[in-house]
Image (cartoon, helix red, strand yellow):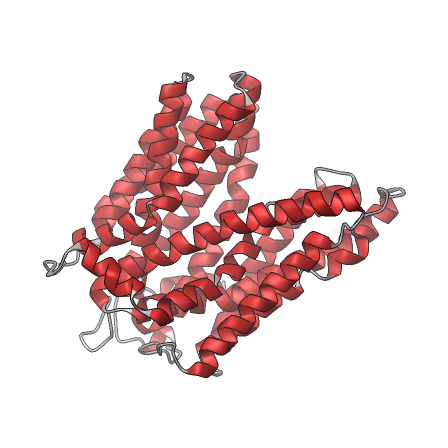
Length: 435
């Protein structure tokens, strides 16, 4: 109820973007986790071809974030959001209708490009519309996104009982509905005519040393968050011997997010500098990887009771990781636009997410290497220790930036309760509010 009341206090455009993110993540995770299995088991493709298809999707999304951010600044975030959802509708529809490699590559390219357009644009629009309640809006955004990431695989597993086509078509229809809703509900905002080239915008943001240093410092936070899908599930499978136990890990994290995210953000946003909480949250994500060390390696579980006991450190790790992300991420997203002028909000988000995507890819590769090296040498604790070290190094870098005074302050960062916000759903932003 607290979350619903908080959502109701925002203007209609913000409420739609929150529900929209629930739908986006539901549709995405309904299909993508099962794509590799479909390509290999149903279509008989080789591992190399599957890697090419998945790689095209990842490269299109991670590599083009900067274009999506610049498009949001120059064309308006609303149009870019709608275009991104429409492209994903087409891309997922192609996954449903085609089984040849050219069609699948086109589907992968379009769905990746859609994410590159959508992700920076929706955060740009949300940052502008939420005004001084930006941190709270991003906290709710995290809640809806996490819920969608849980609902998607559950719905996908049910639809796959029919076939992959049913799952892909359902995802495509969901994105089509979201596209129509955005076109009907999201208000268009005037976009100033650009005075400089896109390259000049990129040069301005990349020339901001504080922004570049901040993006590098946050690499640990986003690199560790991806371990919810790599190292932690692998640890659960080893500790319990049961694939189904991985679902408990995801369910635990989602419930924690629903119950705690908004409370944590509201509690912290009025208690000290935002960058302090970013530092602490990042450190917590690193410390989260210490409990599983006690059950790493060794033989499998000796019965159900032993499996339950061995699961406890992994659940603790997942909870700590989620708590760390819940502490830091809303304030990270609140801070990103403060590094540049209003006209470059999308560019800042695009470059930040491009850096985060690279960090996640490099982090996964590095942790994957540590997992193989640890298993081969009898040092199963190695990947967990590497993750803990990465989180603490990232937090130390953030603390160094904070002490150096190079980070910007967030305009209107004081906590604003819904009743005190000078807006109505029809007039979402008072003239005096920062943009």
